[in-house]
Length: 162
Image 1 (cartoon, rainbow, N blue to C red):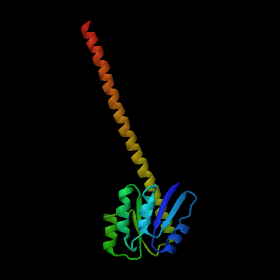
Image 2 (cartoon, rainbow, N blue to C red):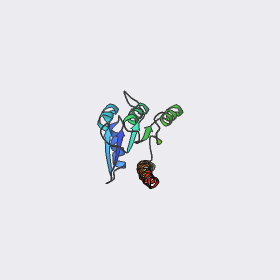
Image 3 (cartoon, one colour):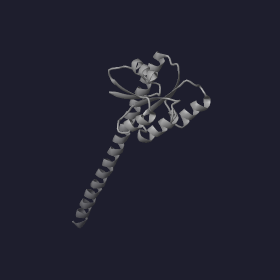
Image 4 (spheres, rainbow, N blue to C red):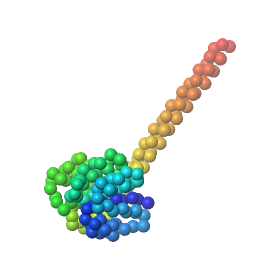
């Protein structure tokens, strides 16, 4: 089950996004307060976060930066009603967002973006797991080589004594 968090101070937007993204294999949580979202998500694995940019108390880039500290592998999407180039660049460079989506969005494009993000996230997770497996196998191989050298050295010393 994929977990998606939606953070938007307008409850209607969060509800609309939840409705649009409703799937049997997606667990969607909505938040209207970014501070509450950070608190709740601190102890929960989350695959994707969709955040509004303009929120009281903390903008979307700040929210996603703080979330990234706890969940560096969670993909991030920003929604905004403003296409200010500075905001877009800040989101991409600072919060390392996967996509920047303008409001009002087109439902089909939003769903395709979320599906694409989740597929990308799955590939990244697979790559991380494979890298870890390879690191573990290399470590085991090193230990086995060292053990074989010890055995080889012990046989060499026995042969030299004969």
